[in-house]
Image: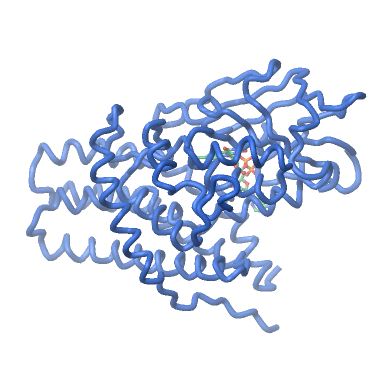
Length: 387
Ligand SMILES: Cc1cc2nc3c(=O)[nH]c(=O)nc-3n(C[C@H](O)[C@H](O)[C@H](O)COP(=O)(O)OP(=O)(O)OC[C@H]3O[C@@H](n4cnc5c(N)ncnc54)[C@H](O)[C@@H]3O)c2cc1C
């Protein structure tokens, strides 16, 4: 059996991205301390600041790759990559606009109606409109084609929705939910009869229930739809094309810098608490962590190069996500042990332990979000012709 070759060709970000990186750094240095909320060293795409989202929009760093006609800036995916790296590296509170900028905007531009593109996409690019993703249901996660929430076409136009979505990140802070629902069919091919709808979360018949995670945070929600009527104009793309659309949307989720920089703050703070002259032992461990991070980053940049060239590196993207998950789940424990033996001040150590504890409690989510480890390994195995 011939196994297809896996490729991670060395790829360098073009020189113009370095000037942009400096611009973003200067902006963050000025903007982050002035924010009204104390977003803290562990802030990331799960922390929120409307002021920050609007400031990003004003700088032209949301909707970067989108057409100017819809409020975008027609820049490259590689420029967007650099901005994302800096946002994560500086723990900027990007949570409000994250999903809209990464997934919903591109989805609407590709499949949405002209009305949806004109009314919603420019507001996303200004950092004023936030979306959440309604895919998972109580009995449907990895096996997404089994969704049961029904959006029944109503005589005269529109849909009446009944069902429950779960783990919906940020629904309580969002304006719209991009939801996958069953609009026709039930038996036979489960991938048929699914559609995506853009649902205004103020619509009557929608209920939100908080789900509190291990770290005590309210990030998730259960979203219920009870005889909720939405107009025909809520449909994204064609009725029945939901499966095709949703799988293309998932491609935006994997292999980006968030897959290895989500808890970068732990490494940054570890280096700080180890002081200016760490022991040889501490230096060696930090060196190993940085080497792993750099390897992941090179692999991720390589995937970004493929995407920029219009290719779809599914296996490579899945591998970056899997290896990034392993690294990010090991980091807090390695860092905590090293800080306990080598931190230079007790005061720093207390703050660091809080941070490491927070990260340890968030770490189980890495295995699940953006595709579970087992599902991703299944994708890699299939891509290599091993199953
Ligand atoms: C931080 C975070 C944020 C999230 N945000 C959202 C959101 O905004 N919107 C949304 O819709 N969902 C969201 N989710 C939900 C997430 O997409 C689902 O939890 C995920 O798809 C897994 O589905 P499940 O929980 O039903 O588990 P299951 O699919 O039941 O999986 C349970 C276990 O079985 C394994 N498994 C399942 N299928 C296979 C297979 N074919 N082969 C081998 N093993 C398999 C899995 O790997 C897992 O270990 C979020 C999850 C997390 C952790």
